[in-house]
Amino acid sequence: MVYKVGYIIGSLSEGSVNRKFAKALVGLAPESVEFVEIPIKDLPVYNRDLDADYPAEAVAFKDALKAVDALLYVTPEYNRSIPGSLKNAIDWASRPYGQGGLTNPSAIAGVSGGPIGTAVAQSHLRQILGFFSAVLYGQPELYIQWTEELLTPDDSAFAEGNVGFFQGWMDGFVAFLEKQLG
Image (cartoon, rainbow, N blue to C red):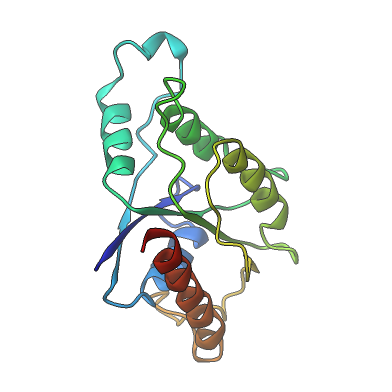
């Protein structure tokens, strides 16, 4: 069985360190897990007035959520919380009420320059996802301090001394998926 995992990057920047981190992380997945990015950059700001006639970008986003078995959120920390773009995507996904796509088994990861990484943003995101009864992969948590030594010089993979920890996280996440999805 192949599990399809959608990953959402909270930063809209193409050069985001979280985008680089996500690429390295999904590169550790076994063949039994297929990761696909679910982009959020083209979503308009959520407006309840649009519930009756969703814009094409929101329909595509919701369809992408329906097409995956699980979700991985890779988010930076902005002002002690998640970026507005990620919250906006969650708002679109959760509407109309009762028709949300956020109950999939999920995991959270992220990097930032600060010494506690994205711990506060992840705590906030866990609260939000808990409201939707999302089942979250808990340990180990991946709130990582970004350094230039985290990835290889071309940013394509984790640097030699970092692979073991992140491979262990990926192996645990796959075991979590197997338990949740059968």
